[in-house]
Length: 79
Image 1 (tube, helix red, strand yellow):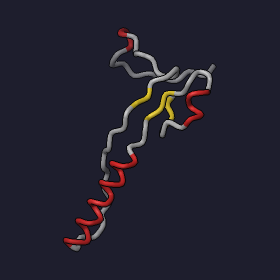
Image 2: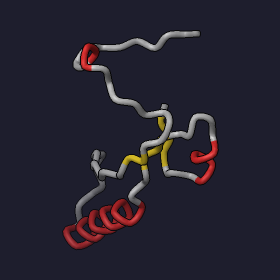
Image 3: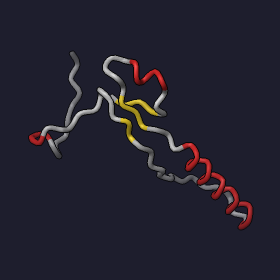
């Protein structure tokens, strides 16, 4: 299980929730660059996907994949 934005509450859940930190500065910078480029070159907006990596904060809900399971598809089990 994984959360996002590393909110304070994630540290106090049981087990502590692993999260991805949102790279807010980089996301804003990329958006501004695209808008400026569109304004300067008169381009129309178009759908696009832009990947901006954010660091993983490993806590209690992250574990290594056992070697016997590496590369194999998995299914969630209901308890």
